Length: 512
Image (cartoon, rainbow, N blue to C red; front, side):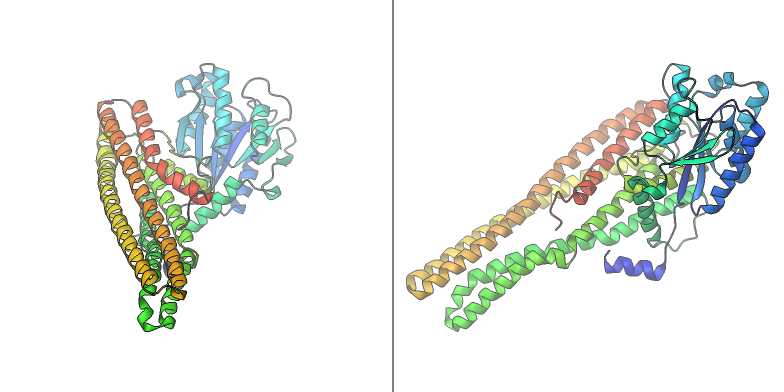
């Protein structure tokens, strides 16, 4: 971490923080031999877990009759935030309940922070199976109230438990008849990489300083907005340093080329002076090769990409904040190190969901003004700047090449033809040294030009795509297609940053 950023963290302390979340999923039997005893066991387990955890425990479950409903009611009674996943629409789901049980289910849904319908299969039993799988996918630990016997049909507890075990998800099995607990895939036996890196990255991001002097955010939406501001400004602190320092190796290489080519012309000052100039050129060449490591350019670049990716993922989440359903542009399977941050943002979004979503037309208008049109202008401006930068670098490269050739040929001709003999060898060495430095300088310049051209093409592609999506959004009138289009837009805006992050992590590109 650059000194400026680390010092700021140490002196100012952490700013706004996202909640660290433990998503506790649930699956269990509908029919229980003794519902009262099972309620007591579930309640006791949740109370103990909530007390022992430093993280915010969030329940993830359906509210089907039986143990699912007991889990949901226990979460609400203990003040544990509950996210409800339904296999069917409320109207269809109600057909599985009698009046008394449905009244309990409705009360549990009113107490939940979010209610989401998952599953898309036409068959009713398959929808329950999909809901169970989604519960596992959205959880870090699965609690199962189960008698240990085979499933009676698709979506049974045994199938969901087996799926979780195959996924490597920690499973706490509570025997539905004895209350005995057994654990599979214990985190202490080797936690998954996703959970480990997700928690470590969120801890790092939470420690970053807050750079706003305004009042502390209060509502979940204000916390999410302040979180984005914090990430944005910390990324800005790092980015200019990377751009400035990355030019130093090229400057040193160019100076080394000049000194090496000019050294033979110092014959009037004696061999010692000429040797000193050659030595200075060699030192600068060596410095150019060592500077990336000395200045930690690779680490600085990696830190910028790290912060910028977290900021842009948070920006995408906020852009979809007012949508009626939970949406996630990228998941832990793409950015496992940001899984903790995504869980925290999802909790805040669930806690801030209004009773009624905004009208589709109002959301589209807001999204266009606050997100899409701004991004279109940004990419148009970036494409123009990249094209101008490429032209400047091409001109600079041509001028440097011509000047280097003239200087080298003139020096070589003067030293070789006027004073043949011993001095000829030094001229040859100077020519070779200068030529090597020039090749390195030109190669570096060509890399920059190539990158400018690539960025210009990429920016124009995104600009054109955004223009098409703008037209499509303006023509839509219902939520499902709007959600799909917005999801495509946000994924497109994140693609390049995710590619950069992957390349840096896997060392597939120069780190300087």
